[in-house]
Length: 476
Ligand code: GLN
Image 1 (tube, rainbow, N blue to C red):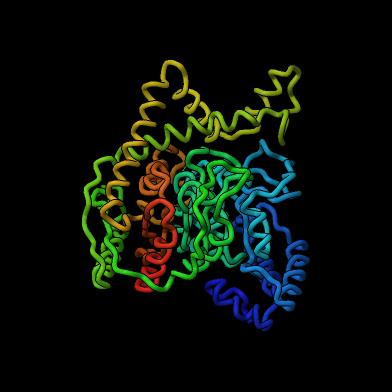
Image 2 (tube, rainbow, N blue to C red):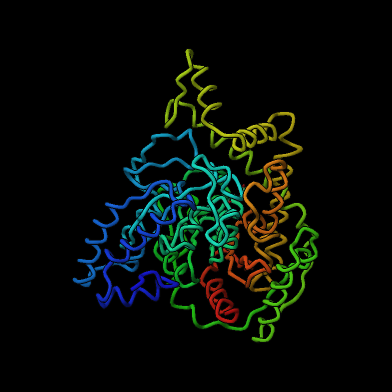
């Protein structure tokens, strides 16, 4: 028997009735990790430990004392702290670093009796859209190994798709959960900024960083979100709003008003099949009785520059702490204190990260701050307001998740800046801090998955998940 059905929710009753044990499930997923090492999805696998933990959870199931995620096997992006386990953020600069504490996300997963199977490969510090900027090497797409799995949570997406774990926890600063989900044919949820605590999550750009969930189904996302969302004394930006039971509302959709951002579909760089499938998805919604309107959004073209100015600025200050003194790697070639800093950082960070630190330092420098950083903050506010304006008249905004389906490995090697354009549609919700979900929406002619993105209003994840689950059903 195979213990990796298409969702954890379909496995749950088998675990509860003790027809299957968590040990058997975890054992089988570990085998999948072993046989698909070429995907490079994991940087560390906690094989012995996950089996030991599964035994404990199985006992709890027998005693009817288990938590809501009992037996769910979860992978963590290498950006999320797990006490006494390595944490490298896909970077050499954190070599040999062992986290002395759990991220709040990790703590809550464990409290719900989820089983943590390992840490997953990603772009260094979450900076990238292809998981090619990874110290541990490129992650391959399980659907076509000549292509990328997306990024920066590429290992997390590949692992779920290749059935190495049921669910992965990634981070989404500008699309890093939604884009790899789209590239691998999965559901990827980035909740509202502040819905999930960032405590113990390696910082890239703190006013954007959002832990997110990659799963096969909306229902699995909802179960996990219920367990990990909510206020946290360790993170002042974690919102105080109460956490509803997201799974309960899933099957009762209403009739909604949906805004389609017209400009996103007329973009020249958009792969025609993605446009077709997005339009088809909107047609299906109309047939279901929802109202779908084209809405003009004049600020679309400013979202990407605004995003890259602000995240680089924040990254340049966040990454200042990696100096060879406090964490991880220290250069062996330094003879003075200053050399410890400079050589450690020169040797410890790779090219993309250095580029962003330099760009970030530039836009924050005294002569540039007003024209770049401050201006970008103002534009961010305008984008937020304009999105809020749309969402005051509509329940959701729909647009594609990506401009293309999964591209070939090395596609952008000689022009790395053009990879930034692939984030065009995901950065919008990130700049505004709104919740957004990517859902599978058919395949292109090469059989590669296409993603569609639904953006909801602040802290309306319950409504967003309900609608997403409805869409998931009608697309099937
Ligand atoms: N690709 C985007 C970037 O490089 C998004 C990354 C992310 O969400 N972590 O910034």
